[in-house]
Image 1 (cartoon, one colour):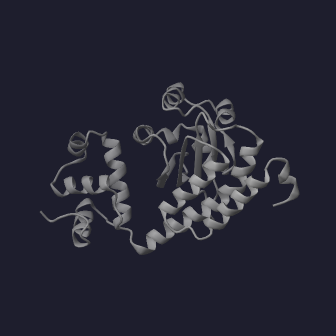
Image 2 (cartoon, helix red, strand yellow):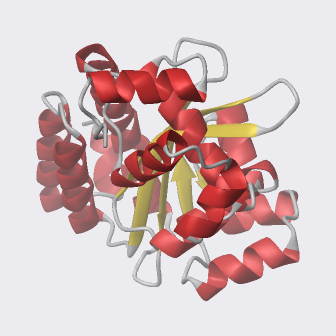
Image 3 (tube, helix red, strand yellow):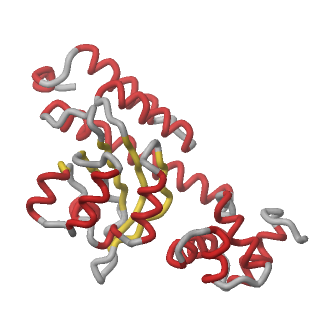
Length: 251
């Protein structure tokens, strides 16, 4: 740590930060990453945190994958994905364009988001916060780390800490995803298994959305993840692979 940082960080801050960075070097699981985020909350108290990988497509749309939801409101995450708010959220679009530290309120002023998006986010307690990411060597792909909540301070100290720690958290997230991909692309979530089970039963997207009480867009999102994880060409192919690997029952 350079001496200039002592202007913003106490000796205790530095000890915690060094410990966090040291632990990040051996972080190999999503559970361990969640634990690192917990340590970070000792430095910058926050109410909500989430991280993920993603990229900005050529048409300007944003694609998310491999999320680690520390404690974001699950309902808000579902709504965000269902309504594809990432395509109108200026913070997400800016992150996957420049991968710089952002305070939401500053980005909102520069790039006005839809009022409905802001209002609904505020209903879930997401009024202001910070987002920071790091770029992967491959084009526009990279990470996004978001923090928010009434207990979070919006000041230079918080920004300095995020600037120092996010690159290390990024490396941990990428390492975890790469390791998971090497071990098995067939690690399906409970909801993905439910969707796959109904595909096996011959249900179409609309029927599955009715059964599970979600939108067709959400079902399509899960199907896309299933296909990628299983390296499947078709839905029928995905079912066959899942049965072969014991991910879903034959009956």
